[in-house]
Amino acid sequence: MTSPAYWDEAKKELSKTDKVMKKLIASYEGETMQLRGEAFYTLARSIVGQQISVKAADTVWNRVMMAADKITPRKLANIDAAILRSCGLSERKVTYMHALANHFLDNKDVIKNWPNMTDDEIIKELTSIKGIGRWTVEMLLIFHLGRPDVYPVADIGLQKAVFRHYNKNEPMNMLDFRALGERWKPYRTVATWYLWRALDPVPVAY
Image 1 (cartoon, rainbow, N blue to C red):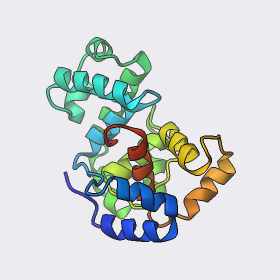
Image 2 (cartoon, rainbow, N blue to C red):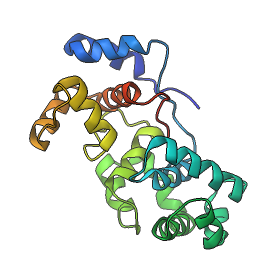
Image 3 (cartoon, rainbow, N blue to C red):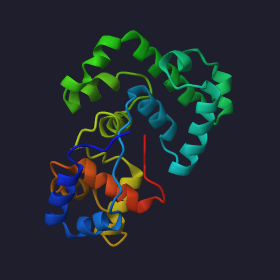
Image 4 (cartoon, rainbow, N blue to C red):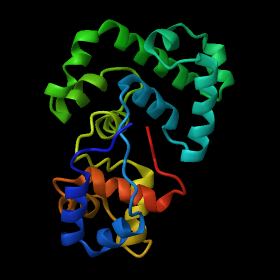
């Protein structure tokens, strides 16, 4: 795993323009987001993490890795649904996992072209798969493709961290929440990671 090339520059820019972000960045000096080299791994891991805590997702994912031996489209497409359910996946997430695996097996050429596609183009392609929503694709954009300006507004952890650090722990309407993210452009990915980091005892990774 490697860190994004833009990370240090992003830290400098965010620290200049946002006092709260400057403090958060200083609190985790020496830590950076780690990119994963396997797109399928990131998306499958994101499906597991849908609507559950980071800790619970880690537990289920570790079981899936043990059951599958290796996380590849071919392995996940062929693994029995009952085995995945025994790992802690719901019936719905098992269906999503198989749909994702089959998409990778059937669309290898499109997947190779992702580096040349915009964020929105990749989101449009992948959200056509059953069970893959915008949030899941955003995790791919952040943790696999290393796109610098992703702002996953539907992420509950991100919302909680923003409310805590920017609104005295009070909820914020979505219009204001989106507007806050504008100040972090073109490095909203980095701001998001530090807000996640401030919320969880371990770095978020997909």
